[in-house]
Image 1 (cartoon, helix red, strand yellow):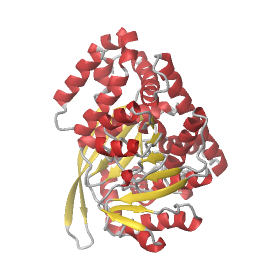
Image 2 (tube, rainbow, N blue to C red; image 1 turned 180 degrees about the horizontal axis):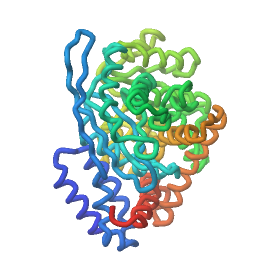
Image 3 (cartoon, rainbow, N blue to C red; image 1 turned 90 degrees about the vertical axis):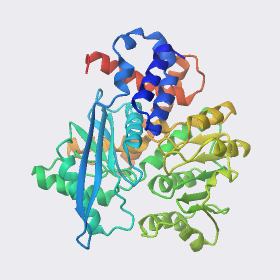
Image 4 (cartoon, rainbow, N blue to C red; image 1 turned 180 degrees about the vertical axis):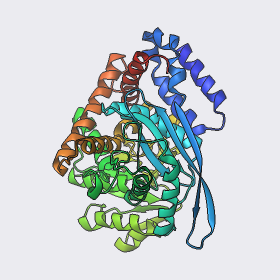
Length: 448
Protein backbone atom coordinates (compact mmCIF):
# COMPACT_ATOMS: atom_id res chain seq x y z
CA UNK A 1 0.00 0.00 0.00
CA UNK A 2 1.14 3.56 -0.70
CA UNK A 3 2.74 5.04 2.46
CA UNK A 4 0.72 8.26 2.20
CA UNK A 5 -2.55 6.32 1.89
CA UNK A 6 -1.63 4.11 4.83
CA UNK A 7 -0.80 7.11 6.99
CA UNK A 8 -4.08 8.89 6.24
CA UNK A 9 -6.09 5.76 7.00
CA UNK A 10 -4.32 5.40 10.37
CA UNK A 11 -4.79 9.08 11.20
CA UNK A 12 -8.46 8.92 10.29
CA UNK A 13 -8.93 5.85 12.50
CA UNK A 14 -7.25 7.62 15.40
CA UNK A 15 -9.45 10.71 15.00
CA UNK A 16 -12.68 8.74 14.58
CA UNK A 17 -12.37 5.73 16.92
CA UNK A 18 -16.12 5.30 17.43
CA UNK A 19 -17.21 5.58 13.80
CA UNK A 20 -16.93 2.08 12.28
CA UNK A 21 -19.06 2.69 9.18
CA UNK A 22 -17.08 5.79 8.26
CA UNK A 23 -13.74 4.06 8.81
CA UNK A 24 -14.85 1.12 6.68
CA UNK A 25 -15.65 3.24 3.65
CA UNK A 26 -12.55 5.44 4.05
CA UNK A 27 -10.36 2.32 4.15
CA UNK A 28 -12.10 0.78 1.12
CA UNK A 29 -11.87 3.92 -1.01
CA UNK A 30 -8.34 5.05 -0.13
CA UNK A 31 -6.87 1.56 -0.48
CA UNK A 32 -8.04 1.35 -4.09
CA UNK A 33 -6.64 4.84 -4.81
CA UNK A 34 -3.04 3.79 -4.04
CA UNK A 35 -1.97 3.50 -7.73
CA UNK A 36 -3.36 6.98 -8.43
CA UNK A 37 -1.54 8.49 -5.46
CA UNK A 38 1.70 6.83 -6.59
CA UNK A 39 1.54 8.85 -9.82
CA UNK A 40 0.55 12.15 -8.21
CA UNK A 41 2.97 13.27 -5.48
CA UNK A 42 1.33 16.71 -5.61
CA UNK A 43 -1.68 15.24 -3.82
CA UNK A 44 0.39 14.61 -0.71
CA UNK A 45 2.00 18.05 -0.92
CA UNK A 46 -1.49 19.60 -0.92
CA UNK A 47 -2.71 17.29 1.90
CA UNK A 48 -5.48 16.29 -0.46
CA UNK A 49 -6.40 13.00 1.20
CA UNK A 50 -6.43 14.56 4.66
CA UNK A 51 -8.83 17.17 3.32
CA UNK A 52 -11.10 14.80 1.43
CA UNK A 53 -11.72 12.57 4.48
CA UNK A 54 -12.65 15.59 6.63
CA UNK A 55 -16.11 17.11 6.08
CA UNK A 56 -16.07 20.75 5.07
CA UNK A 57 -18.86 21.33 7.56
CA UNK A 58 -20.67 19.23 10.17
CA UNK A 59 -23.92 20.67 11.47
CA UNK A 60 -25.64 19.17 14.54
CA UNK A 61 -28.80 20.59 16.03
CA UNK A 62 -31.67 19.88 18.41
CA UNK A 63 -35.13 19.09 17.01
CA UNK A 64 -38.02 19.58 19.47
CA UNK A 65 -41.55 18.58 18.49
CA UNK A 66 -44.89 17.50 19.99
CA UNK A 67 -46.77 14.25 19.50
CA UNK A 68 -50.56 14.02 19.16
CA UNK A 69 -50.98 13.88 22.93
CA UNK A 70 -49.04 17.10 23.38
CA UNK A 71 -45.93 15.41 24.78
CA UNK A 72 -42.63 17.04 23.87
CA UNK A 73 -39.88 15.00 22.21
CA UNK A 74 -36.26 15.85 21.44
CA UNK A 75 -34.26 14.35 18.57
CA UNK A 76 -30.90 15.19 17.04
CA UNK A 77 -30.64 16.61 13.54
CA UNK A 78 -27.54 16.46 11.33
CA UNK A 79 -26.24 17.75 8.04
CA UNK A 80 -22.78 16.69 6.85
CA UNK A 81 -21.63 19.00 4.06
CA UNK A 82 -18.73 16.82 3.03
CA UNK A 83 -17.25 18.16 -0.20
CA UNK A 84 -18.44 20.91 -2.52
CA UNK A 85 -15.52 21.06 -4.94
CA UNK A 86 -17.59 20.23 -8.04
CA UNK A 87 -20.98 21.64 -7.07
CA UNK A 88 -23.47 22.28 -4.26
CA UNK A 89 -23.60 19.59 -1.59
CA UNK A 90 -26.07 16.89 -2.62
CA UNK A 91 -27.31 13.90 -0.69
CA UNK A 92 -30.33 12.54 1.13
CA UNK A 93 -31.91 13.04 4.52
CA UNK A 94 -32.41 9.85 6.52
CA UNK A 95 -34.90 9.53 9.40
CA UNK A 96 -34.09 6.37 11.32
CA UNK A 97 -33.26 5.48 14.95
CA UNK A 98 -29.85 4.18 13.81
CA UNK A 99 -28.77 7.55 12.41
CA UNK A 100 -25.57 8.85 14.00
CA UNK A 101 -22.42 10.67 12.94
CA UNK A 102 -20.63 7.51 11.78
CA UNK A 103 -23.50 6.47 9.50
CA UNK A 104 -23.96 9.94 8.04
CA UNK A 105 -20.24 10.51 7.54
CA UNK A 106 -19.88 7.21 5.66
CA UNK A 107 -22.91 8.06 3.52
CA UNK A 108 -21.63 11.58 2.86
CA UNK A 109 -18.12 10.36 2.00
CA UNK A 110 -19.53 7.79 -0.44
CA UNK A 111 -21.76 10.50 -1.90
CA UNK A 112 -18.73 12.53 -2.98
CA UNK A 113 -17.58 9.82 -5.39
CA UNK A 114 -21.04 8.64 -6.39
CA UNK A 115 -22.06 12.17 -7.38
CA UNK A 116 -18.80 12.73 -9.22
CA UNK A 117 -19.37 9.53 -11.21
CA UNK A 118 -22.67 10.85 -12.57
CA UNK A 119 -20.58 13.58 -14.32
CA UNK A 120 -23.18 16.10 -13.08
CA UNK A 121 -22.02 19.19 -11.11
CA UNK A 122 -22.95 18.11 -7.58
CA UNK A 123 -20.88 17.75 -4.43
CA UNK A 124 -21.34 15.25 -1.61
CA UNK A 125 -23.37 15.56 1.57
CA UNK A 126 -25.78 13.67 3.83
CA UNK A 127 -28.05 14.38 6.75
CA UNK A 128 -31.03 13.31 8.78
CA UNK A 129 -32.14 12.54 12.30
CA UNK A 130 -32.56 9.69 14.76
CA UNK A 131 -36.33 10.28 14.55
CA UNK A 132 -38.35 7.13 13.79
CA UNK A 133 -41.36 7.86 11.52
CA UNK A 134 -42.75 4.31 11.81
CA UNK A 135 -46.03 4.23 13.70
CA UNK A 136 -46.32 8.02 13.81
CA UNK A 137 -49.37 9.84 12.50
CA UNK A 138 -49.18 12.20 9.53
CA UNK A 139 -49.67 15.14 11.91
CA UNK A 140 -46.75 14.00 14.08
CA UNK A 141 -44.50 13.54 11.06
CA UNK A 142 -45.51 16.98 9.78
CA UNK A 143 -44.65 18.62 13.10
CA UNK A 144 -41.29 16.86 13.23
CA UNK A 145 -40.45 17.82 9.63
CA UNK A 146 -41.39 21.44 10.30
CA UNK A 147 -39.22 21.54 13.42
CA UNK A 148 -36.34 19.89 11.55
CA UNK A 149 -36.54 22.33 8.63
CA UNK A 150 -36.79 25.35 10.93
CA UNK A 151 -33.11 24.81 11.71
CA UNK A 152 -31.95 23.13 8.49
CA UNK A 153 -33.16 26.02 6.31
CA UNK A 154 -30.32 28.18 7.64
CA UNK A 155 -27.77 25.94 5.96
CA UNK A 156 -29.27 24.91 2.59
CA UNK A 157 -30.20 26.51 -0.72
CA UNK A 158 -30.33 25.78 -4.47
CA UNK A 159 -26.69 26.83 -4.90
CA UNK A 160 -25.44 25.75 -1.47
CA UNK A 161 -26.80 22.38 -0.34
CA UNK A 162 -29.68 20.47 -1.91
CA UNK A 163 -31.00 17.60 0.25
CA UNK A 164 -33.19 14.79 -1.03
CA UNK A 165 -35.03 11.88 0.54
CA UNK A 166 -33.50 8.67 1.86
CA UNK A 167 -34.55 5.95 4.27
CA UNK A 168 -37.60 7.16 6.21
CA UNK A 169 -37.94 10.26 4.04
CA UNK A 170 -40.26 10.04 1.05
CA UNK A 171 -42.51 12.41 -0.85
CA UNK A 172 -44.68 13.14 2.20
CA UNK A 173 -41.73 14.23 4.34
CA UNK A 174 -40.14 16.24 1.52
CA UNK A 175 -43.46 18.03 1.03
CA UNK A 176 -43.75 19.00 4.69
CA UNK A 177 -40.15 20.23 4.74
CA UNK A 178 -40.50 22.21 1.53
CA UNK A 179 -43.65 23.88 2.86
CA UNK A 180 -41.82 24.93 6.03
CA UNK A 181 -38.82 26.19 4.04
CA UNK A 182 -41.13 28.28 1.83
CA UNK A 183 -42.98 29.65 4.88
CA UNK A 184 -39.79 30.78 6.62
CA UNK A 185 -37.86 32.04 3.59
CA UNK A 186 -40.81 33.57 1.72
CA UNK A 187 -39.24 32.28 -1.47
CA UNK A 188 -40.22 29.60 -3.96
CA UNK A 189 -36.78 28.02 -4.21
CA UNK A 190 -38.06 24.75 -5.63
CA UNK A 191 -34.47 23.71 -6.33
CA UNK A 192 -33.68 23.53 -2.60
CA UNK A 193 -34.99 19.97 -2.18
CA UNK A 194 -35.34 17.10 -4.62
CA UNK A 195 -37.76 14.20 -4.51
CA UNK A 196 -40.64 16.68 -4.55
CA UNK A 197 -44.16 15.92 -5.77
CA UNK A 198 -44.87 16.43 -9.46
CA UNK A 199 -47.23 19.34 -8.76
CA UNK A 200 -44.44 21.48 -7.30
CA UNK A 201 -41.27 20.73 -9.22
CA UNK A 202 -40.61 17.02 -8.83
CA UNK A 203 -39.23 14.80 -11.57
CA UNK A 204 -40.82 11.82 -13.22
CA UNK A 205 -39.15 8.46 -12.44
CA UNK A 206 -37.58 9.72 -9.20
CA UNK A 207 -39.18 7.01 -6.96
CA UNK A 208 -38.00 4.25 -9.31
CA UNK A 209 -34.69 5.85 -10.24
CA UNK A 210 -32.29 3.98 -7.93
CA UNK A 211 -33.80 0.59 -8.74
CA UNK A 212 -33.90 1.34 -12.47
CA UNK A 213 -30.34 2.65 -12.33
CA UNK A 214 -29.00 -0.53 -10.71
CA UNK A 215 -30.43 -2.59 -13.55
CA UNK A 216 -29.25 -0.23 -16.30
CA UNK A 217 -25.77 -0.50 -14.79
CA UNK A 218 -26.09 -4.28 -14.43
CA UNK A 219 -27.17 -4.48 -18.07
CA UNK A 220 -23.90 -2.86 -19.13
CA UNK A 221 -22.01 -5.45 -17.06
CA UNK A 222 -24.01 -8.23 -18.71
CA UNK A 223 -23.17 -6.84 -22.14
CA UNK A 224 -19.49 -6.76 -21.23
CA UNK A 225 -19.76 -10.43 -20.21
CA UNK A 226 -21.77 -11.32 -23.36
CA UNK A 227 -24.63 -12.30 -21.07
CA UNK A 228 -28.24 -11.23 -20.44
CA UNK A 229 -30.95 -11.21 -17.77
CA UNK A 230 -33.11 -13.66 -19.65
CA UNK A 231 -33.97 -16.66 -17.48
CA UNK A 232 -31.84 -15.60 -14.53
CA UNK A 233 -32.98 -15.79 -10.91
CA UNK A 234 -32.43 -12.79 -8.62
CA UNK A 235 -32.31 -12.54 -4.83
CA UNK A 236 -33.10 -9.06 -3.50
CA UNK A 237 -33.38 -7.63 0.00
CA UNK A 238 -35.67 -4.80 1.04
CA UNK A 239 -39.18 -3.97 -0.11
CA UNK A 240 -39.11 -0.18 -0.59
CA UNK A 241 -38.57 2.08 -3.60
CA UNK A 242 -35.22 0.61 -4.62
CA UNK A 243 -36.48 -2.98 -4.50
CA UNK A 244 -39.71 -2.05 -6.25
CA UNK A 245 -37.89 -0.24 -9.07
CA UNK A 246 -35.36 -3.05 -9.46
CA UNK A 247 -38.05 -5.76 -9.60
CA UNK A 248 -39.98 -3.76 -12.19
CA UNK A 249 -36.93 -3.53 -14.46
CA UNK A 250 -35.73 -7.13 -13.84
CA UNK A 251 -39.15 -8.38 -14.90
CA UNK A 252 -39.02 -6.21 -18.03
CA UNK A 253 -35.58 -7.61 -18.86
CA UNK A 254 -36.70 -11.23 -18.53
CA UNK A 255 -35.34 -12.12 -15.08
CA UNK A 256 -37.17 -13.48 -12.04
CA UNK A 257 -36.93 -12.11 -8.48
CA UNK A 258 -37.66 -14.71 -5.80
CA UNK A 259 -37.09 -12.82 -2.51
CA UNK A 260 -37.87 -9.61 -0.68
CA UNK A 261 -36.98 -8.89 2.93
CA UNK A 262 -37.49 -6.56 5.88
CA UNK A 263 -36.51 -6.33 9.52
CA UNK A 264 -38.92 -9.16 10.38
CA UNK A 265 -37.45 -11.71 7.94
CA UNK A 266 -37.63 -12.59 4.26
CA UNK A 267 -40.14 -13.95 1.76
CA UNK A 268 -39.33 -16.67 -0.77
CA UNK A 269 -41.62 -16.74 -3.81
CA UNK A 270 -40.35 -19.48 -6.16
CA UNK A 271 -42.86 -18.49 -8.85
CA UNK A 272 -41.31 -15.04 -9.01
CA UNK A 273 -42.38 -11.56 -7.97
CA UNK A 274 -43.09 -10.85 -11.60
CA UNK A 275 -46.77 -10.10 -12.17
CA UNK A 276 -48.34 -6.60 -12.18
CA UNK A 277 -50.42 -7.61 -9.15
CA UNK A 278 -47.39 -8.71 -7.12
CA UNK A 279 -45.27 -5.70 -8.08
CA UNK A 280 -48.13 -3.33 -7.25
CA UNK A 281 -48.52 -5.03 -3.87
CA UNK A 282 -45.04 -3.79 -2.93
CA UNK A 283 -46.40 -0.24 -2.99
CA UNK A 284 -49.22 -1.28 -0.68
CA UNK A 285 -46.73 -2.99 1.64
CA UNK A 286 -44.51 0.08 1.76
CA UNK A 287 -47.47 2.34 2.61
CA UNK A 288 -48.76 0.01 5.33
CA UNK A 289 -48.28 1.00 8.97
CA UNK A 290 -47.44 -2.64 9.70
CA UNK A 291 -44.60 -2.75 7.15
CA UNK A 292 -43.98 -6.46 7.54
CA UNK A 293 -43.03 -8.48 4.45
CA UNK A 294 -45.01 -11.39 5.90
CA UNK A 295 -48.03 -9.55 4.49
CA UNK A 296 -46.78 -10.44 0.99
CA UNK A 297 -46.37 -14.11 1.95
CA UNK A 298 -49.89 -14.20 3.38
CA UNK A 299 -51.33 -12.48 0.31
CA UNK A 300 -49.71 -14.74 -2.29
CA UNK A 301 -49.32 -18.00 -0.38
CA UNK A 302 -45.55 -18.30 -0.25
CA UNK A 303 -42.97 -18.94 2.46
CA UNK A 304 -41.92 -16.42 5.10
CA UNK A 305 -38.71 -16.97 7.09
CA UNK A 306 -38.90 -14.90 10.31
CA UNK A 307 -35.71 -13.26 11.53
CA UNK A 308 -33.62 -14.50 8.58
CA UNK A 309 -31.85 -12.94 5.61
CA UNK A 310 -32.24 -14.22 2.04
CA UNK A 311 -28.58 -14.71 1.14
CA UNK A 312 -28.68 -18.51 1.41
CA UNK A 313 -31.33 -18.75 -1.33
CA UNK A 314 -29.77 -20.01 -4.57
CA UNK A 315 -29.78 -17.52 -7.43
CA UNK A 316 -27.72 -16.19 -10.33
CA UNK A 317 -27.64 -12.54 -9.21
CA UNK A 318 -27.76 -10.93 -5.75
CA UNK A 319 -28.80 -7.32 -5.15
CA UNK A 320 -29.02 -5.96 -1.59
CA UNK A 321 -31.44 -3.03 -1.67
CA UNK A 322 -32.16 -2.37 2.02
CA UNK A 323 -29.44 -0.77 4.15
CA UNK A 324 -25.78 -0.86 5.20
CA UNK A 325 -24.04 -3.87 6.75
CA UNK A 326 -26.39 -6.53 5.36
CA UNK A 327 -23.63 -8.83 4.13
CA UNK A 328 -20.61 -9.99 6.10
CA UNK A 329 -18.15 -12.73 5.28
CA UNK A 330 -20.56 -15.56 6.21
CA UNK A 331 -23.26 -14.21 3.89
CA UNK A 332 -20.65 -13.74 1.16
CA UNK A 333 -19.59 -17.38 1.51
CA UNK A 334 -23.20 -18.50 1.07
CA UNK A 335 -23.57 -16.41 -2.08
CA UNK A 336 -20.34 -17.76 -3.57
CA UNK A 337 -21.30 -21.34 -2.64
CA UNK A 338 -24.57 -20.82 -4.53
CA UNK A 339 -22.57 -20.27 -7.73
CA UNK A 340 -23.43 -16.61 -8.23
CA UNK A 341 -21.56 -14.68 -10.87
CA UNK A 342 -22.95 -11.19 -10.20
CA UNK A 343 -23.43 -9.04 -7.11
CA UNK A 344 -24.77 -5.48 -7.46
CA UNK A 345 -25.29 -3.03 -4.62
CA UNK A 346 -28.63 -1.24 -4.63
CA UNK A 347 -28.14 -0.09 -1.03
CA UNK A 348 -25.31 2.01 0.39
CA UNK A 349 -22.37 -0.10 1.66
CA UNK A 350 -24.41 -3.27 2.26
CA UNK A 351 -21.29 -5.47 2.37
CA UNK A 352 -18.17 -5.39 4.52
CA UNK A 353 -14.78 -4.84 2.87
CA UNK A 354 -13.96 -8.45 3.72
CA UNK A 355 -17.09 -9.68 1.96
CA UNK A 356 -16.37 -7.65 -1.19
CA UNK A 357 -12.79 -8.96 -1.29
CA UNK A 358 -14.11 -12.52 -0.93
CA UNK A 359 -16.50 -12.02 -3.84
CA UNK A 360 -13.75 -10.71 -6.09
CA UNK A 361 -11.31 -13.45 -5.06
CA UNK A 362 -13.90 -16.06 -6.03
CA UNK A 363 -14.76 -14.62 -9.42
CA UNK A 364 -18.00 -12.80 -8.55
CA UNK A 365 -18.34 -9.51 -10.45
CA UNK A 366 -19.10 -6.72 -7.96
CA UNK A 367 -21.06 -3.63 -8.97
CA UNK A 368 -20.31 -1.26 -6.05
CA UNK A 369 -22.90 1.04 -4.50
CA UNK A 370 -21.27 4.30 -5.53
CA UNK A 371 -21.70 3.18 -9.16
CA UNK A 372 -24.72 0.87 -9.27
CA UNK A 373 -26.68 2.90 -6.70
CA UNK A 374 -26.16 6.27 -8.42
CA UNK A 375 -29.45 6.38 -10.34
CA UNK A 376 -31.35 8.09 -7.55
CA UNK A 377 -29.00 11.02 -7.15
CA UNK A 378 -28.63 11.25 -10.93
CA UNK A 379 -32.37 11.87 -11.34
CA UNK A 380 -32.26 14.21 -8.34
CA UNK A 381 -29.67 16.27 -10.22
CA UNK A 382 -31.86 16.14 -13.31
CA UNK A 383 -34.69 17.47 -11.12
CA UNK A 384 -32.42 20.36 -10.12
CA UNK A 385 -31.83 21.08 -13.82
CA UNK A 386 -35.53 21.04 -14.56
CA UNK A 387 -36.21 23.38 -11.63
CA UNK A 388 -33.60 25.87 -12.85
CA UNK A 389 -35.05 25.80 -16.37
CA UNK A 390 -38.68 25.94 -15.17
CA UNK A 391 -39.29 23.01 -17.50
CA UNK A 392 -40.28 19.37 -17.06
CA UNK A 393 -38.93 16.56 -19.20
CA UNK A 394 -41.20 13.67 -20.14
CA UNK A 395 -40.93 10.27 -18.50
CA UNK A 396 -39.21 8.94 -21.63
CA UNK A 397 -36.68 11.80 -21.64
CA UNK A 398 -35.75 11.31 -17.98
CA UNK A 399 -35.49 7.55 -18.43
CA UNK A 400 -33.22 7.96 -21.47
CA UNK A 401 -30.96 10.39 -19.59
CA UNK A 402 -30.78 7.99 -16.62
CA UNK A 403 -29.88 5.10 -18.90
CA UNK A 404 -27.08 7.14 -20.51
CA UNK A 405 -25.72 8.22 -17.11
CA UNK A 406 -25.57 4.64 -15.83
CA UNK A 407 -23.86 3.49 -19.03
CA UNK A 408 -21.28 6.25 -18.65
CA UNK A 409 -20.66 5.33 -15.01
CA UNK A 410 -19.91 1.76 -16.05
CA UNK A 411 -17.74 2.76 -19.00
CA UNK A 412 -15.80 5.41 -17.06
CA UNK A 413 -15.18 2.93 -14.21
CA UNK A 414 -13.88 0.35 -16.68
CA UNK A 415 -11.62 2.92 -18.35
CA UNK A 416 -10.24 4.14 -15.00
CA UNK A 417 -9.39 0.60 -13.84
CA UNK A 418 -7.72 -0.21 -17.15
CA UNK A 419 -5.59 2.97 -17.03
CA UNK A 420 -3.96 1.61 -13.89
CA UNK A 421 -3.66 -1.98 -15.09
CA UNK A 422 -6.40 -3.32 -12.79
CA UNK A 423 -8.43 -5.18 -15.40
CA UNK A 424 -12.20 -5.37 -15.09
CA UNK A 425 -12.31 -4.18 -11.47
CA UNK A 426 -15.48 -2.12 -11.14
CA UNK A 427 -14.89 -1.37 -7.45
CA UNK A 428 -11.46 0.21 -7.92
CA UNK A 429 -12.54 1.77 -11.21
CA UNK A 430 -15.51 3.56 -9.63
CA UNK A 431 -13.38 4.90 -6.79
CA UNK A 432 -10.68 6.13 -9.14
CA UNK A 433 -13.03 7.70 -11.69
CA UNK A 434 -14.99 9.47 -8.95
CA UNK A 435 -11.88 10.63 -7.14
CA UNK A 436 -9.96 12.03 -10.10
CA UNK A 437 -12.56 14.67 -10.95
CA UNK A 438 -12.92 15.83 -7.34
CA UNK A 439 -9.13 15.84 -6.77
CA UNK A 440 -8.46 18.04 -9.77
CA UNK A 441 -11.20 20.48 -8.71
CA UNK A 442 -9.80 20.64 -5.18
CA UNK A 443 -6.29 21.35 -6.46
CA UNK A 444 -7.56 24.04 -8.81
CA UNK A 445 -9.37 25.84 -5.97
CA UNK A 446 -6.35 26.01 -3.64
CA UNK A 447 -6.38 25.22 0.05
CA UNK A 448 -10.00 25.09 1.20
